[in-house]
Image (tube, rainbow, N blue to C red; front, side):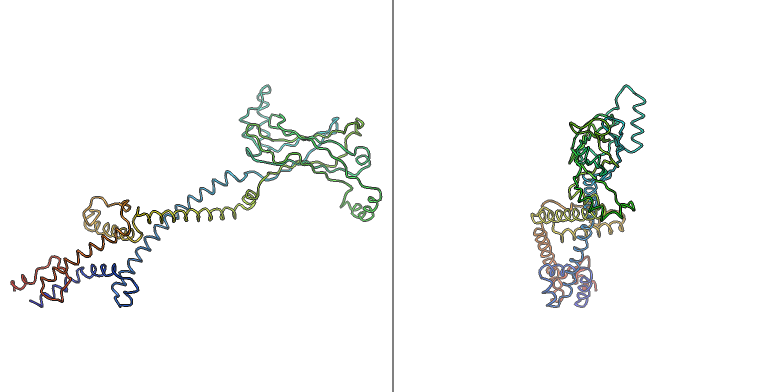
Length: 408
């Protein structure tokens, strides 16, 4: 009979009792103490729990970080769409002045040829009606509320006529929409730079080879800032520039009233700050940097939020959460193997992971109380065996020793 009791105790030990005892001992000691005392079964339990917690935390972190990466990607795209200009940053158009007019003028259109053809087609279709505002908005050159600068440049020969006769003249710049209406105008005076006879001789002495080879010319380039940081209108977009040259007051009328001009052009340049310039001229680098910074801020905010909620006790601790995930996964696997019931314990629906009132301290207390009750039941079952070698062991469905002995 004692030998049968020992066999039954060994069988019970192999059927699950050591797992409960190790879990209880692991909950009551530290990893350092277990290694120091040589309790390698406790070390195994602690390392297993740590591995489970790390695996589940890593999986959850990977899912959350992937979602935050998608959110950061959408935020960066939206920000770039709203802030970065879509068209070219600068546009150059030549001005061909008409000197048959008393005041020579020229018009430079900044619309693409396709938009010009569409506007002309609307004008020919309805000569008596103005071009509708919807058509003007659909063929705009600059985005609404975008700031831009307008510059006019003239290349003037240093001829006796320009230097001695004209001297000073007036330049008028007008911004027009698709209908030809003037939406803004500005005027600037221009004066030829004075050069004395002696200085002209010195320049000619040093630069005459360049003049002979047609590498340099005796001319002056005058650049006029006509509009600075002008905001584009939403209802009446700008599409063209008209430049007009006028003689100064008191000058003789006729061909001698206006200067001689080699060439002229109009420049439109978007007015962008340092951030917009960086986003516009370095699109790939700025996108990667903004995406990384936004993603980092979102991940840091999510981590701080989870830490605050866990510290307040509103959700389970990471270790308790990991244990419950492992238990539920094992239950699903066992339930599917037992006949497709879904859960091994027979529950219809799983309990929620975040019950709103279970903290890490409550979980540890519950586990400690459960382990202590299991230890008491084991010790009571061991007292029935009548020997110290079977203390703390519990039988699961096995016959008692006295029954085995009476049968024998």
